[in-house]
Length: 144
Image (cartoon, rainbow, N blue to C red; front, side, top):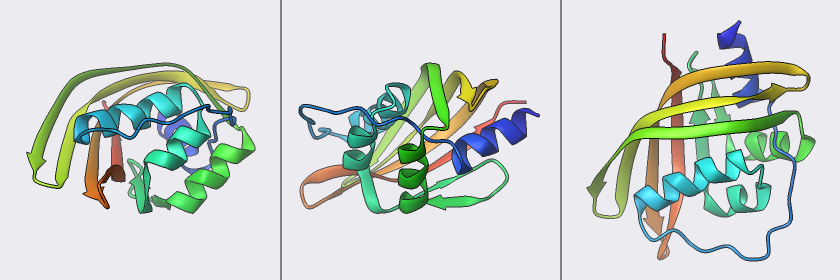
């Protein structure tokens, strides 16, 4: 059931749009990754769209790949509410204009009216392109 819920989060989940007055570009890969998760927690589709690379993809635990457009569409539809999301154990490895951020995300929320709570390990690859840091890909794997 947890797998189904997490897959729903990644495939069909969306986050209600909130107007954002300003967006501050992340200064490094760590801040870029944190901005991504903060946008999910705050259900801020504007910040999410600002931090995602044009060729962004997220890979769910079952290997399904979801592209930027699919995630953006899901965000616009409002199916998911993230109530809490705590990052821990974050580690960043920098390779010039590429950063790999790993850690654990303990997330609780609802997909439509169905509640979920999962602890997942994550890998975020952030890239610096045109002077701005963007999230290129994310992989989430549930902790068993």
